[in-house]
Image (cartoon, rainbow, N blue to C red):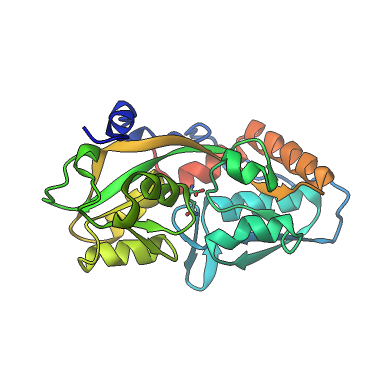
Length: 261
Ligand code: GLN
């Protein structure tokens, strides 16, 4: 057994177990735009990478998705105007750190490494890394991953970090999830490692792909904010808590991730 395989095998987690902050059936607890912040009228610049459904993507020329809607509600709570910047995932942390963006929200996993550069809000979702393969692929479980095959990832994501660590040159990096999945569809890579909910979205949007039952590490998503902006971090945590409590986040999540039957 190759190094790392054992760890991965013990991490077998059903991709479908992805549970977000509760899958409620609560009604759209649409919050009135209360103001808990001091940013009345100011702009809240949120950096994301809008190729990561169901968290952020473009539909009919508009940004939509769980993160997009939650960030809009946070902006409402803070009495601010939301402005979305669609940038490469790998540039979000540095851009937030330097103050170019007020916050980053992109299905972003809290990692020790990123915490050296930015602060993270309380988490609002959990995820696992999933493996997508063409239906009927010889790759049937995480144990079949090796440096002999081509593994597609989105560059600078946790999937990239784990896979590069274990399989080195086997890893082929793409700018975003949509590009990685396109490479899989056209046979340029043998599998794609990506977060479980985007994996499900991509598989349902593309014929002939399937998700393996086994998955990588468990992760938590949070919003990143500059270490110099403690006040905004507190405001965001306050808004998140309220939106969690009043069912708004549950309602947004279940709109994009219908409960499985
Ligand atoms: N959750 C993964 C990460 O933080 C992927 C996020 C993304 O691609 N938007 O690295």
